Amino acid sequence: MLYRPLGSLSVSVLALGGHEYLANGSSRGFNEDHGDATKAGYIGKGYGERQRRETLQEAYRLGINFLDVTIDPEQEALGRNLRDDPPPHDVFVHTRPQGMGYGYDPYNARMAQYDELRAEAERILQLLQRERIDVLNVPFLQPALDNDPDYLDKIGENVARLRDAGLIGRAGCDTFSSEGTYLRQIESGHFDSIAINFNFADAGAVENVLPAAAERGMGVVTREAFLKGALFRMGGEAGIVDRDALARAALKWNLSHRHVTSVLVGAADASQLRNAASILDHLPLSAEDERLLDQLRATDTCRSTKASKDGRFFSSR
Image (cartoon, rainbow, N blue to C red; front, side):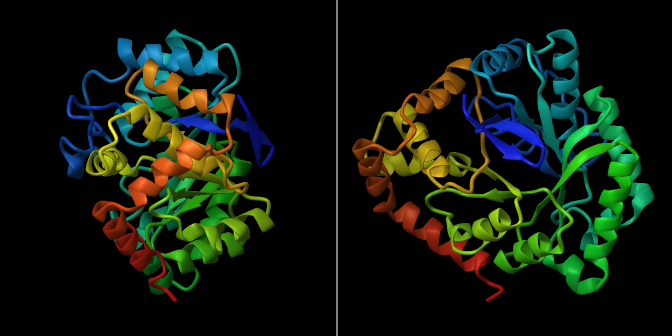
């Protein structure tokens, strides 16, 4: 395993995502009852069972020490799994508040209220059965900044108070708004890292966002390397049947960008995670990797995806 710095942490370049998957390959919770799954108190049955425990054990064997979880049942399952099957090395958890970020709360107002954000951090820690959240991801949209000129400063104060209280170690920022919102988050100086969608069809961050984060010494945690499964649909369109090779090429593309600290890997089982980790045997993109990516870029699905993603990401210009 390779490790890169995120603040004072040394985290694995591959992070295990917390999603568990339905038989059709879509993520649980979000694709069962999205409205409830993103709220605090959502209960999902069957998380953290045998297949997930085996995947976690494989992650530990591979040297992965960075774990991401989002919705409540993922947080609860990770806490239970860490308690029942303790990892052989320190692990760091990256997670976010429920029902407060993105478009789940008007103007993301609740995150700007310290008492509310503190109560949510304490609730998450109970689910995780941990004393501190290693990286709390704070995801807010541009309307929060437009609605309240002091919003960023309020978030910064809340983050500092949570650190002083020992409830979090570090804070990350995140948005789905645009490049401009990310740059304002980065320039505020309140955060240790960013979390961002990043893949060969959604690469707008290369131009300004990743360099700006690196200039401030911030970590960069990337997600959606597989485009929520669209990678494999593109592969089918291009006549590529080797899904493992597609996954490896997508992950290598991510880590070929020097500003990327860690890429979140969605793995349904241990074999998928082993395939992901095999890229470390030869991390540079090979000629075959480049050929596969060129085939994907030539598909109608990739071209339309790129146009849509670029349009949204650069909308603030």
